[in-house]
Length: 228
Length: 118
Image 1 (tube, rainbow over the protein chains, first blue to last red):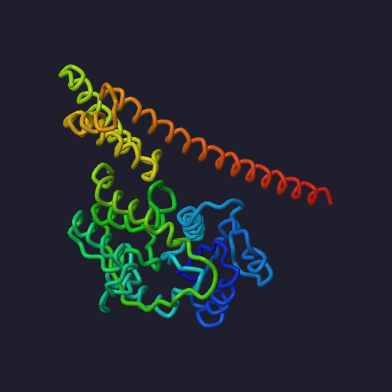
Image 2: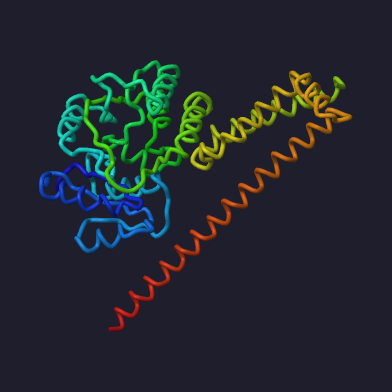
């Protein structure tokens, strides 16, 4: 029984998924993985089936948080100690998982974020403006510094797997990280590199980015005070 | 604005804020954060309007309403219509998802039964 599970939510990732999973299978057999096909309209499910990948096929589209939660329920049922949120578009590199695991185990952290800006300087671009604002909001409400809150590469320990798998409002998003920090969870960051996606469309299209920012800002700055 | 109406508005908006906050705090696990945002904003904007009615009054006169309260009513009706439209949209999507799920379960059940017979 391997103890680390990579959860790979995939929505219309036919162009990327095979490359990502083949890389995992051949070069990183020490990690288990599960693809969660989030009701894709393209050939994602066929590709997973044809290649014999380990995958969960959601019959309807649930969105990133619903798909990831399905993966977490699987991780919980199978008894994994750590679950990693891993993108199916090839922008996350599996070589950093070992350093994340080491930090998570040594420091007994609840969440380890694969951070693009832990040591590296955050570039001051329009795209990073949102990241700055979310970091600032988290610092304002929790007093803690999370340098890359929007990074989609996160590792969760057993306690977090259970919490995220069976509760509402525990989306794998920065506002949940902020909420957990306020409740005393320990979050660490590890410097990683990421790649630009090569094919297909991201969950976060430019059109959705602004709405995402507003939602996160409101949730971190306003709603978190009313949550318990 | 009539001081009596203003008092009612302040009390009403405070009650709605308390109600929304209590629902989020104690009704945990039942209310998604995304869905609470609009209610919290609405409750707080009601409070702001009732505390500083001059904002609405000058806006109403600027737009040519005879009575500011008419403007308030019209605006709230607009917000409610918008909310109902969004809810209707969400219900349509939910119905579609539920029927997709029911069909999938039924087909899988059917396949399992025919396999058992063979």
